[in-house]
Length: 309
View 1 (cartoon, rainbow, N blue to C red):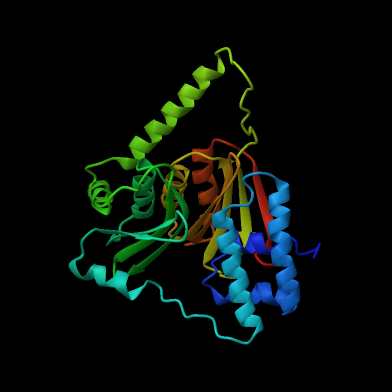
View 2: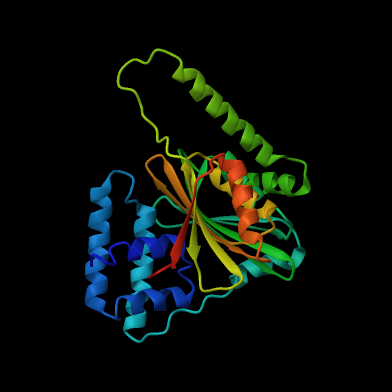
């Protein structure tokens, strides 16, 4: 238990749970022991809640529950459900080669948002920027392509109020893809204005208890993966709305394609994990430089152990 007390949260937040290799690796690490899995599941929740507010969330709980459920199946000798690269109902959207946005209820306050369009460089970051500009917090994202048509699936939740209509998101997404609307530029300006306002407030006389914010420098953590053509990188930085869009654009500028992303927030700190395709040996350096240009921090930590060990 002590040795593997971080196994479930690390695997759930830094791995593709639809990949059977992830589930098999976690199960083998636990010696195919169902009792150990259940005890570790309970310990993970208790440990997270004891660590501090914001460490345990409904989203994190759902990821770990899904991981444990799949591990139970493997340990019981059951077959994991087959996952298609993209759901057939979404691939049918490709027939007219148009731009599509669908919003469906998820668990709790979460929503499943699908944004599909002919593939182009920057599509994922523009989709994420549209969601951020409409006050939707992104919890996860996955991207797939089929014959030149891209499908990006998001799990989101509104920061406040009711979510926007799918038609509004489609209109903005269409404008962003066509170059008529600079959603990333708008997002950057909003972010810059927020930082400037915070700086101005810092010089004012504060009344009452001051609010402290994390000043830890941003970090890039590399996680080993068994796939030779993929990289998994986790970025830790001060959380802010639209951070995912800016990070995905940095990854796109580095020449990588985003396979999936998972967003975690601990208090005021974001820990966003990305799986990207690596075109060549220099992809890792290119990703680092591009991410650091967004984060503005020099610290880089490399994790040598593979996910799930």
